[in-house]
Length: 273
Ligand SMILES: [Zn+2]
Image 1 (cartoon, rainbow, N blue to C red):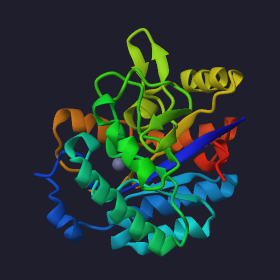
Image 2 (image 1 turned 135 degrees about the vertical axis):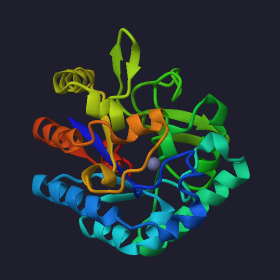
Image 3 (image 1 turned 30 degrees about the horizontal axis):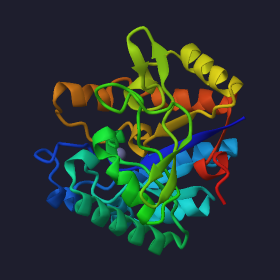
C-alpha cells in the first residue's frame, strides 16, 4: 500500500505569526540555508529510491531557484506552499488568490511542470476558511492537503482519509495528514512536534491500521528539521516547543517510516494523471 510522503520547502525563518521577529521585508537579509537541509533530505530519498511531493514556498523558489531545480532533477512532484507563508485565516480571499497565483507563476516558471497540489501554511484551512478550496479549484488545482483533523489548530470535523470536497466550480480532492486517536483527542503524528514526540510503535500501529482499511497515510517534513545548525532564536514558549523540541529525532523517524512502509508522491497515491 502506497502512503504519501510530503515536504514543505521553507527556510528556518518562515515561522507563522512572528512578523515582529522575522519581518518579511527583511527575509532577503537572513542567511539562506534551505539547501542544506534539502540536500540531506533529497539524499536520503535517493538512497531509499523514494519519491515525494514537495510543497515549495514561492518566496523560497524566487530567492533560490536551484531549490526547485534540484527537486525536479530528482524526479519528485512539485507543488505549492503559497508565496508569503501567512495562514489562510489571516488573509482576505483576494489576498489569498494573489499569493497563490504569484507562487504558481514563479515555481512553474522555474520547474516547467504543471502544479496541481497546494498546502497552506500551518494547516490553516478550517471551517472558517473553506472558501480557499473554491479558489484553489478556480485556479486549476486538483488537490489540497491543508486540513488537520485536530482541535484548536485544525478542523476536527474533516474526514481522516482522502476525500472529495464540493466547491463552486466542481470537486477538489482533500488529503489530510495522518492523526492518531488518543484519550486526549487526535494527535498530529504526521508532522512537526507530533511526529517528534510520537512513539515509533504507536506511529507504526496507526499506519498499519489505516493501511488495513485501505487508507493511505500522509506524513510531512521540512528541510530545516535536517539542518540542525540553523540559527535558533528566542521564540514565545509555544512556538519554541513546536519548532525546536526533539528536532534531532526527525531524521530517525523518516528512516523508520521508509524502512517499514512504502511511500510515494500524492499524485501517485491519489492516481491523478
Ligand atoms: Zn510552512
